[in-house]
Length: 318
Image (tube, rainbow, N blue to C red; front, side, top):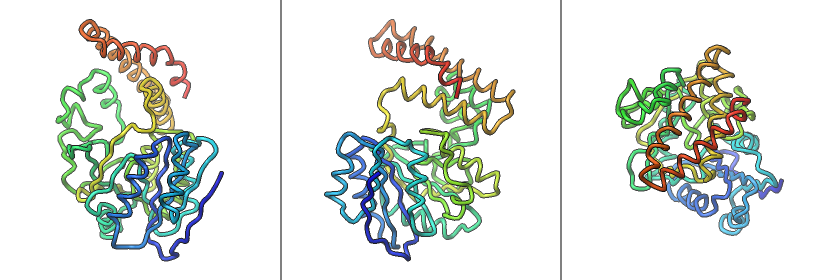
């Protein structure tokens, strides 16, 4: 593992940690936005590159020689990479920021100000939007529930996105426009007090990618720490940049959901959740199978979900 060290101000309040994997242009834009939009307090940036094959590490060395870069020779996953980067960080706070993000309107400064005004909480998140500035509602979530799994399996959450009943786990109907305590803050834009991160032991490395942020927040809440949402801290989050093959992405997502449920729920409840995940995949196969009669794109989706189902032994064995 290669490290490029920079001078770090010992008085830095904040370490911004970005884990990259084959997102060269996006991570460069992300770094530029951090530097342009974060003005009011000292900070450091640590980029952990997970063995990208697109020249990410070389370009960061050339364009940002003062940034601390850790270039891994193998892809260690999102959780392990963040843990290693955090181990080298300075300051009272850690900000986990996805590489496919752009900081807007002093968002990091705003989130830090918000955290300092709320010492009763330990984890903080902000508002995420798409490139066209429409709401990206994936910045925070409720703790998972069997009702939420059922609504997802039956497609009710998609049909009634604004419903707090049928889209419960995604806080349906809330535009992320008010201060609110939430259950889970997305790891794409997650600020945490350093001592809490260390107390919790960081991310659970059993979560290679996806759900590590859910697990962290659930453990934090169990330990008595609140998660607060700040609507004034806003970033663009494109989403899905590191994993572009839908079938692989869905298998990994299902695997981590099964693992999360088994870790935090009773065996019986986790078993019901796994059955509802089966139902989710089967309803997608049925839906896209019917829709595929009318278009090639839907037929491709149908084949994708069939392949996901064929690999269910993998994600059931999580």
